[in-house]
Length: 120
Image 1: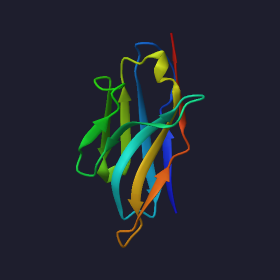
Image 2: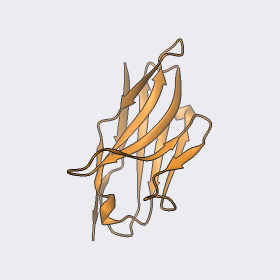
Image 3: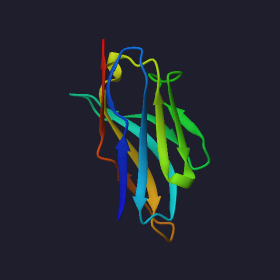
Image 4: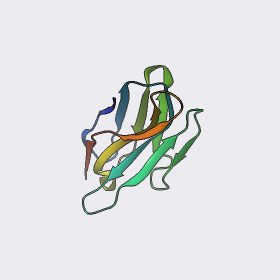
């Protein structure tokens, strides 16, 4: 059994910062790509940022230059540092990861989501 547990969401004023964390636990052999998605009310879930096991990153155009994704492989944790937050960043943020519990068979997992609200 594998779990992804997010933390760090909350309410912040526009221009402020938040740092999200997502820790994977359970039967973990290897983690490949990890990422953060978000879903605003009435909108589809979208990719915010992703990071490979080797550290290569990619970002949605809307967050480039403001958000930074990183990971600590020893802790099975991925982070999202969010700076210069805007009201349009308000959403539920979800952690996602491809995890193998052995034999290099990877399963895609989602966290439960954490609310980020940016007030104007």
